[in-house]
Image 1 (cartoon, one colour):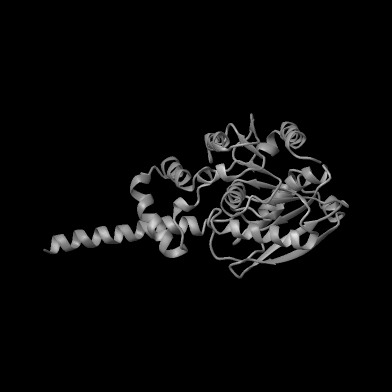
Image 2 (tube, helix red, strand yellow):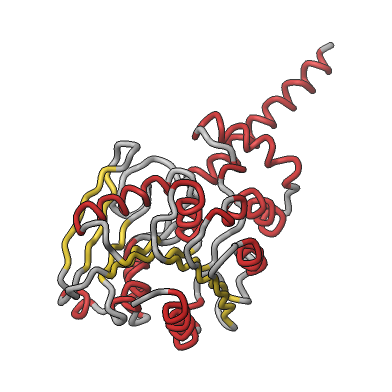
Length: 302
């Protein structure tokens, strides 16, 4: 009897440990140091303070539907109705969005860059990889259209989690932008987690994910299967440019290829030769810009 009880308690506490460990890693993923991000972008020349400070811009605070504040920056060097919203990746902040913003400023767009929940200066307690973030993106879009009027030529660029957030927004809430650029999105959070468990921790996803998923639902009120761009990609009617580095071993390029294959209607795919995760622009700048220009020329009326 004692042996049976001991076995039961051991199993019970093991399951508790797995559940809390798994959900903690997702909900409270360690973010990059903000000074590290700034110094990295400065050193690489992707953020030039003198150029950035010369831009016409204003700090903006937008209230999330979940009650916290979303901190954004509205950059408007042009008298134009063209706007691009940039959604950064997990562990980053809006400083990482400046290099993408600059591409579109050169092409006559104004821009909004903002911090996701629990990142940078924005509020929010957990990271949800697009599940809650898609509602914050909608709040940013709604704010912009209220301020600047509904007749905008609007694009959204997302990197990694930002790309997944963008696709979930467009596929589940409203396909309200004129075009989308999805740089290195995952196709399914469940598949991404399974891959990371096997690659980094040598652990079987078939055992851990069901337990962790239950704890995620109890603690953060969503299922891991709710975060699945591949399941909603065919709902997006407006053009999408899919981008991924061929050498990305964090989120595999095959995920973007699956998203591209599933997307109906106007679309383009650019697979960059160099760079690992989220490095397509950094390592293939000329080809990246060429892909954007070809996409805009083909699908967006400028």
